[in-house]
Image (tube, rainbow, N blue to C red; front, side):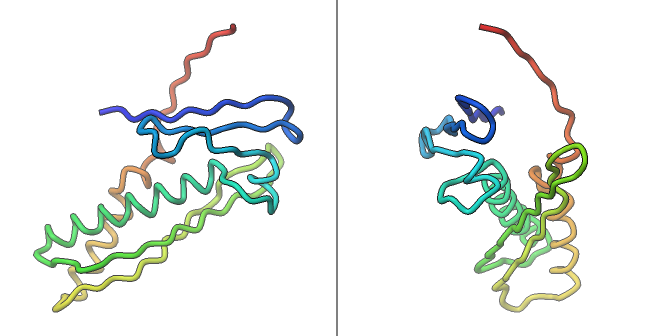
Length: 140
C-alpha cells in the first residue's frame, strides 16, 4: 500500500509560498509559507500535518491494542504536540507529545498501560522518524 501527498513551492524561502495536496483530494492545494510554518500567520504547515497524522494513527493503534487485550474502548481523543526547534544545522523536530483521553468502561489498568505503550511504539507514524528515506530527483 502506498499513499501520496504533494507540495509545490514557488520563490525564495521567506518570501515564497506553496501548496500542499493529498492524493485523496480531501486536502487540495492548501497554501503554506514561511509565515504559516515559523510564524503566526493563519494556514497549515508540514509539522502540523505530521502532528495530525500522529494523533490519528496513535488513536487507531491504541484502539487495536486495547481490543487485542480484550478491552473495548468507547472513545479515544489524542492531541499530538510537535516541537520544532532551531539548531545549528537548521530546524529539527525534537519531540512529539501525545496527550490521550480514554473512555474505557470496566478497564483493567495494567492492560490499558500495556496497550498505550504498544500503540506508542507500534504506530506507523511513530516509527516514521526512524524510517529509511529514499530520494529520486530530476531537473526540468
